[in-house]
Length: 204
Image 1 (cartoon, rainbow, N blue to C red):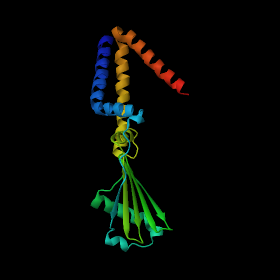
Image 2: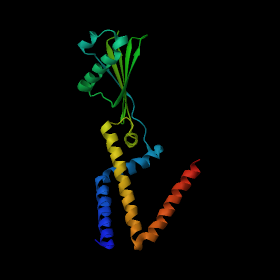
Image 3: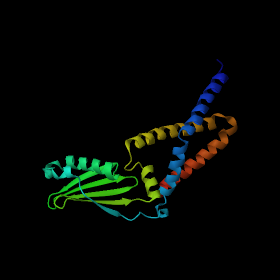
Image 4: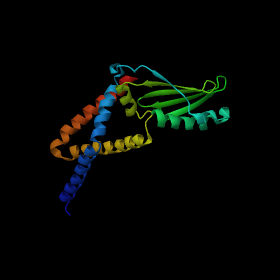
């Protein structure tokens, strides 16, 4: 195989990687671009929705639970699953707290779209659920940062980052390998890189 045909074959492979990597993460790149813009401009958010409070009667089986100060995590998990099934109350990340003075179980549920605070007053046999939803833009910002998101989304974000890196590097290779575009591409590369470095320098 001659050198020219070898270069042509390499260019074809790199071009295919460049094209299909872009198609694979096209929606993700658009999402990160749009959400990244709003992430840099938090003033554009219209604020969070007001907190709503709901009082729920606990299930009968919860009355028979004992040793709350020792088993509040186990009881809290069962309660959280019940609230998810019966009242659609859920979160991606959660924390349990036990207040021995007030005989109170606290469950803090967090998701990209808002926070939920569940308080179970054992003596009063009363569950209070306070939900604080975020605005749509704030929700997008949390998803962009993978904050309180599922493991699947985090894996997808990591995979998309690798694919975007391939897209950028193959695009750079294609731009610099051809003599007709090498000079202009180099100039734009230097200009963009210089602006990036200058912006970083002026931040400090």
